Image 1 (cartoon, rainbow, N blue to C red):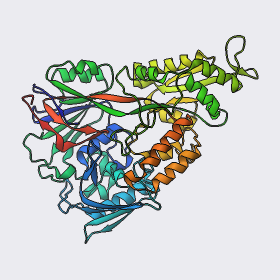
Image 2: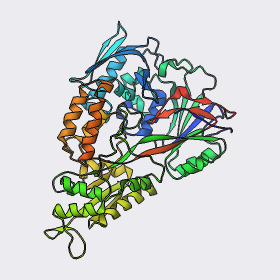
Image 3: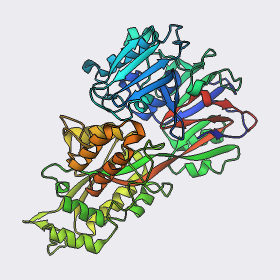
Image 4: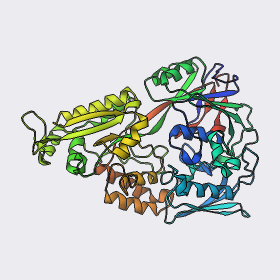
Length: 513
């Protein structure tokens, strides 16, 4: 969504005044190598300096990037590149440049975390330099093969020959180039005046575009809000309690943006309570998911309607009517029927062993996440289940989730933008041999998603929607609430979506218009 904001003269650390656009991110982006991107903050930083073949508009429409046109088949897409695209060092960006990026991303030695998520497994590239075309192919049909390239940032120039330079600089064809980096503090970028191949052919000629982009690392949302109030920032995204403050500040305009569903999973491996589908359903009946969602989002969320972030390639509500409504009495009966009666103390036991659930949630996610975990635990304790809560910091979360697997229920917002990105996490080999961290086995989901995967783009949407419903009916994934964030702008207009900045959309208004 395009944002506009009001008056002031923002300054940021290292800024030179109104010609600098200052934006806050919560964490340090880390290594700025597009092959090693691991979080949304890194994507934000990369989107300033690197291009992709295509872009996606807020309404879901695919528009040109460095590719001016494309032809899609079920297992390939052929791009015709713009002939004028230049890397930041002046070298041309050609079909061979794209092909070399694909080869690097899919090389097992690269160990790219994007492979199998935003980059399809088995992807290959064939360059036709004379025709100005490059064809990306997969061994079997892959739905959204076009849309998946939205997250494939292309390295060019020196970085293509020596990836080690990406540890200290950027080497892309994007509208900004990194000029200085102070880890955990500030990343400064300079505008390229010759840039003309942004979304739909956007360029950087508008005099209202900032000459400098200052990416400020501000871990505290309270601090970011204070910096917006004191004119030290032009933009920020907030999803905590300080967002309400932003909505009341004169000169700051805010909009609400969906940032994807928040969900939890039952571990379905043998020996875990979630292995029994009847027990999963009973535990879900014991919970008022609407109330849980309100707590988890501090009242700022929306009703969950699907498993993919907006704009969804397959719109529609797959959640309503698929999860059991709250019914404590029915949950009590179902737990009895599943072989877990209450003992004299009120605890549900089988053969003298209590029904016990180890639940993990993000300790770094704020008070709302803690309150939601406590509410969920209390709902299950009320029907006789022992619940052991464990808050885990972000740095250790992946290890607990996929390596030690020391959990029965885990709160894990997946944050995917395409249905195909769910496949490796919700089906296939279990961890540690694959990405299926909850040990799910839903044959209906696998059949429907396989059928959908053979159809390009929206042609398979009916099957993708049905596959989501198959997961929900099995209690394999429980979307609680569609999270939102407040995007605040001051003295500027800009667009950011799914963590990706659209740099050519930035305009410094100065007078609040």
